Amino acid sequence: MRHFTSVNDIGDLKAAVREALDIKADRFKYNHLGRNKTLMMVFFNSSLRTRLSTQKAALNLGMNVIVLDINQGAWKLETERGVIMDGDRPEHILEAIPVMGSYCDVIGVRSFARFENKSDDYNEVILNQFIKYSGRPVFSMEAATRHPLQSFADLITIEEHKRVERPKVVLTWAPHPKALPQAVPNSFAEWMNAADYDFVITHPKGYELDPAFVGNARVEYDQMKAFEGAHFIYAKNWAAYSDENYGKVLCSDRDWTVSDRQMAVTDNAFFMHCLPVRRNMIVTDDVIESPNSLVIPEAANREISATVVLKRILESL
Ligand code: CP
Image (cartoon, rainbow, N blue to C red; front, side, top):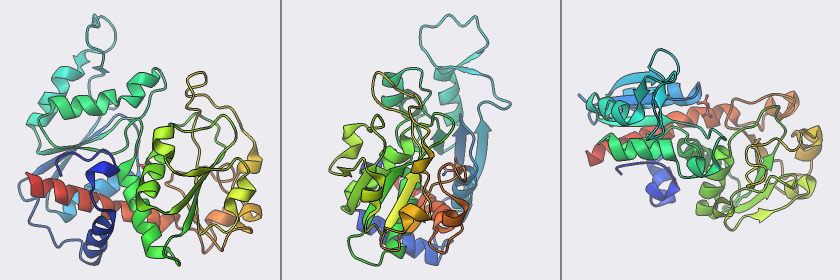
């Protein structure tokens, strides 16, 4: 694997999960692979889990790690070509990226949707510039449209906990005070479709995701109906995707907050969320603290998904 930006880069999902569980049983098994290799993690946005789990994964593989927070201590970067740089951004990303590439062997990038220009977001302008100009393998640590390390960890978690071969998995929108990107739900949908689960998406009208990610999923606007008989509930907020309302918050109805009321109609479903989560907006205290909550094992599996991805990239160097 050279780059990792979506489910398409991971190949056979069953093999990937087997590899993940093998690594989970002995996470230092491939410690020799990263000797004298350096990972650079570049963050345009904040992180707790991605930062820590990816660094831990690199250490599992014997790599050295450098972390750059673009907005804390680095020069502000201009990202548009052709701009007269007379403002507050003294460095252009077209010089910065190859310079970063000269100091490392592999680059991880976190760059969220900015909601300024839908086309720039959905063309992954920042991530693709790293792929084009760094000269290094690049992996996404959450980009504008996808969060594949999270989705891979979600898949591992579902495979570890499922009680039936083809579980019913429900992705539900839930309220949030700020506009959030569609990367997590897009990516989750892409991976659930690839895994061929019984996959349902539920959200208020106006929150339809890009059809390219919805794929063969069933869309059900009645949340209670969507939850009936579910084995896994995956909650997430996202802002509107449509051209007319791109990046807007259209609904704040707390009837959509996941609570015991909805969980009662599931088949004793597990609750999942990528974290960080706003309690009593996305999910009630009772549900997230219940024995069926998988949020901690799901976050712990981020170390495993990142170890698999970095291992495969190192093997390709
Ligand atoms: N789930 C996730 O990516 O968490 P962070 O934003 O804290 O990295």
